[in-house]
Image 1 (cartoon, helix red, strand yellow):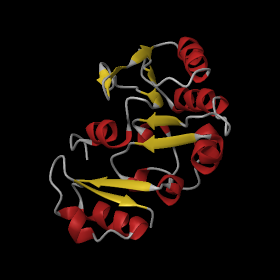
Image 2 (image 1 turned 180 degrees about the vertical axis):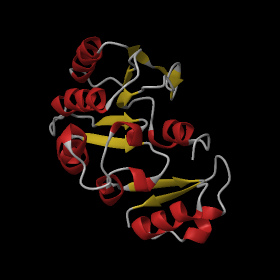
Image 3 (image 1 turned 90 degrees about the horizontal axis):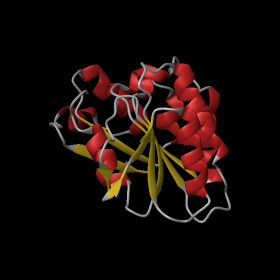
Image 4 (image 1 turned 60 degrees about the horizontal axis):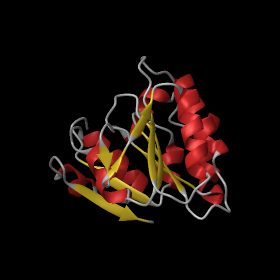
Length: 191
């Protein structure tokens, strides 16, 4: 749920200083540093894309965010994902980690993921794209996210039905999920 530590967990559990990271940051949650590296934020998609292209030409670690100044839409998220999809290269020495914040606000289906986000979820690993998807309620996002993820970091849920939904999708007992407090999580690796 909101305020339980999703963004903090993503930063601490899944990002290393040497990682190449692209971030969809509609609420400016990544201002500052991640893993000791400054996040370079761009409000223009064109400037974000140019920085990402330059970064991918190296093997250096970077943290680059698309942080528009306007209220973002599904179209903004799809354009971000399109740019990221273009950076996929199964031959690159480093994967590109892709943090997608506020996924439920920027997608409209609980079914099969669509657009470039769907491509990243279903085919991204083959092309060196590793996505980290952040959302509050599993019922509100595409089932493709949970079904295709290697790691599930389940955090505090406000409603019991959310815990039971996550139990059905991950196998983690709802009783364990409902006992979680702020900043606590269950990390599932694989099935």
